[in-house]
Image 1 (cartoon, rainbow, N blue to C red):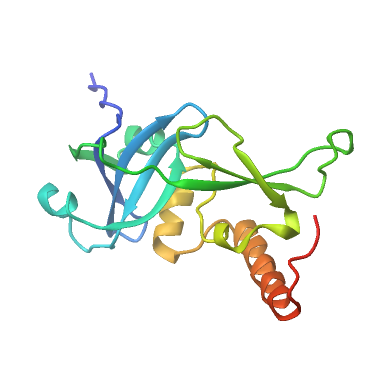
Image 2 (image 1 turned 30 degrees about the horizontal axis):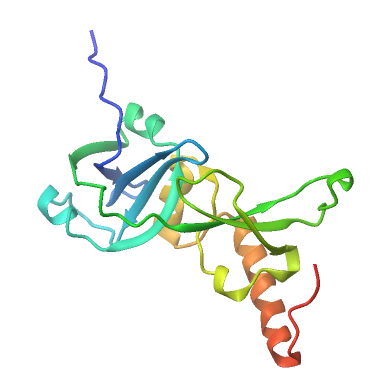
Length: 184
């Protein structure tokens, strides 16, 4: 009989066995009722597994909400230790919400919220008018383990997010030349 694996809980350090055979690490910091499991992906990709003491010292790379139970159950990710989360400053995240003609925001509205706070957060602009200070924020949405592994390897978000961000950067660049950020 196979013994059930313990599922991750906030504070756990996770070793992520990447598809190319290398290793990456994450720190599970929050079970957010409005976003899901929030992890701090840690800096670096390694040929060999690291000792937990070294993993605990790795710097932050990026934030992500990710479904962590399936890859742990499958054995692709494993819990290697824990680190306190009390001193972790939770990130400000951005989301793009689309509505219907009835609620008058079919073009998309940007919101920002601090992880752990109720969603969707504070409205900060229409699709084309995201204030530039929010463009570098990570997205406030849940991804699958495979998607996180791909982002670790490539440094890129989902293709649609990369495209939206490229369009916004282009638009912000043009707005800076003309002194306008465009309308909602």
